Length: 233
Image 1 (cartoon, helix red, strand yellow):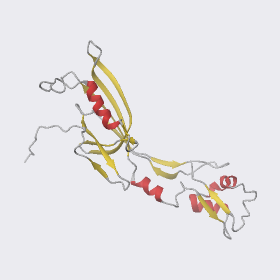
Image 2 (cartoon, helix red, strand yellow; image 1 turned 90 degrees about the horizontal axis):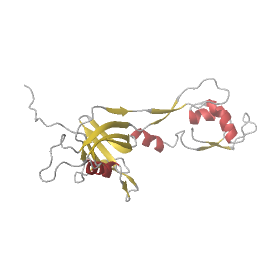
Image 3 (cartoon, helix red, strand yellow; image 1 turned 90 degrees about the vertical axis):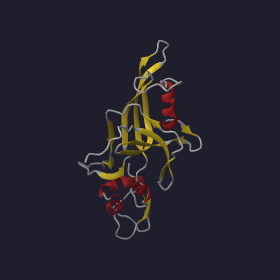
Image 4 (spheres, helix red, strand yellow; image 1 turned 180 degrees about the vertical axis):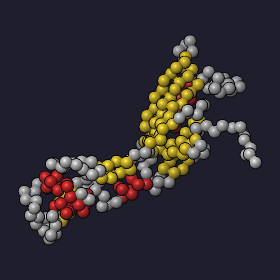
């Protein structure tokens, strides 16, 4: 049997939310959310990884070493209309004007929160898309105007960057990560390529580490010597 349709079309909404230090996300239903007039015709959802590809002196090739999971990004375009063609006028109030709608959107995605010292985190919700992050960029193209010059229609380009992923949090919490400075005390039998392999999983960094530590004879490490191994760039 076919399902019963309500005839209601779900619209993309942008709602303010909070993310605590433990990574827990909450959306306050009492706060106003922004609901688009027309759903975007498409949206882009990108994911990327960062690899360290730095070569050492004299190296002809290099293997890409995993460094971090980059934040996800979502971008799309929406149309804000004040002509009344898209949304029927509100009795006694007329159609919501473009300036008011833009301000409502900016209050959620752009306004600086003085108590948090940062803009809002937001939740994007539309169909199977559930995305938590913050606005990265917003641009407005005004395309239709009243005789007075007041805008009647605007195309808004929005880009959002995701909140820190669990993979990134784990990377920062991992004290053995090559993204953190290490101070190592040399033990008998240690060589610089061996120590580089232990920390960076790549012995090819030994010449750079020798320069960082100003080693005159890196082939003859003395036990008890303390060496600095800086983060990979």
